[in-house]
Image (cartoon, rainbow, N blue to C red):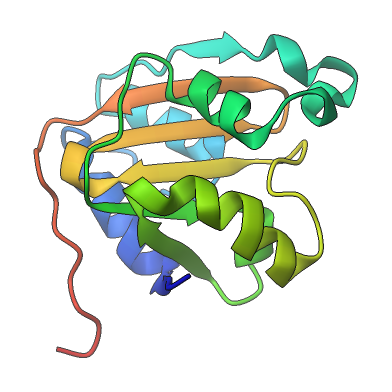
Length: 160
């Protein structure tokens, strides 16, 4: 399956655009920093516990079931999905896949690339620019969803 990589700085720039202006200058790609940034912008991220997280219950559920829970009331529209996992940190680049193929990427490509299942007890960030939708999965077993103020953010082509 085709996927692209996006430098973290570009992902951070997109995150800044979905929140109102914030006096909090620091923003990194981890749940706690995103939460603080949102609060300073006057927005509260509400964290919902993942009942299946306890005791590493991730193994009891399919990737599709976990994605359904993570998405909550949101349905994915066509466009890009930007994904940041712990395995993105060495290169400081996020994965970019077509939203409609996200499950294929999670079940097949990611597992093959990293020799591990996608869902781990770690932080994962999903950004869906066409919906200005941010979903953050925290390593402590909770998820936050935020629909941004701008619609249809566009990925900039690197090097253009």
